Image (cartoon, rainbow, N blue to C red; front, side, top):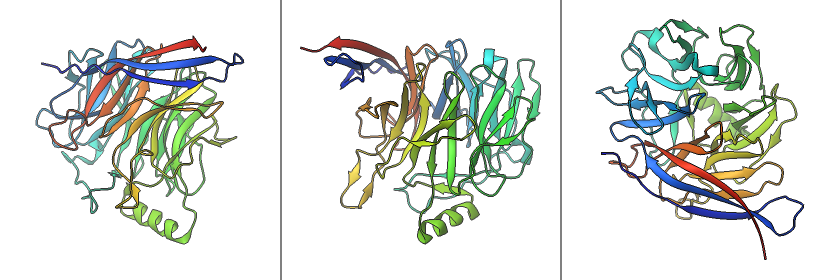
Length: 353
């Protein structure tokens, strides 16, 4: 039986309206846990907002596979898949295709995972992923065919374009390509990490997470990460830019790990995950408690949307802005088990006294 957790989080901040005494209230209502079995995460809405696609270790699998379900958590079923690890799945425009990354081309059931030497730090491996396109008639096409990490693909809101993260040129950068893998274009070039990009609702801008080493120690650390094919948690920040990478603007600068950003359908806000409120004095560092935050782009006003002593991340809005889906360790059977949650997103303007 699925657990339903009702959480009502009321956060108020002053808007940039010309009306002096107008406030905007944001509320997450009716938060519902959608998954229980296995380890589940990174859920994204279909174009019609009726279904979700996500990755999960379930059904006896020791590495992630791709599944779909309704937004009520019903009718969970796997997409056709073979050997390999799977990640970063996404629906295309009009849900004609499913995009995902996989190591299936290597012919190994589940690749070896880099063992984290420091369990206090979040580390994710850069496996030999390629990006695949699966059609409704089950035709599978490898879009990247390059050695190394190609993943984190998301789609343009009205063009048949994909933005994704790749290690193909020796550094983690953002690239764009067509639905068939043609017309490849590199978007970012600065030395360091650029990843997890999303197009804005009008398709003219992108948002992503980034980190760029600024001294010899950080350069050595980053090169060591690249040589060992993993990314160690660093003080990531959120950036926006024009679609081609020009006119880059940094939105966060708090020394914490700010990541998994995506857009509100209005284009006025960015939702993301951060551990900025989990400073641990005894370790002189930020801890593993990630919360969800909403930022108004024009003013930089920040609103905290969740309040848990655990991991909340990968927030994404439905295209109508009425729902938000995210991944969380709350209600987990073990400390690092992740499940998928969905909530109603309420916005209300109120006049002050």
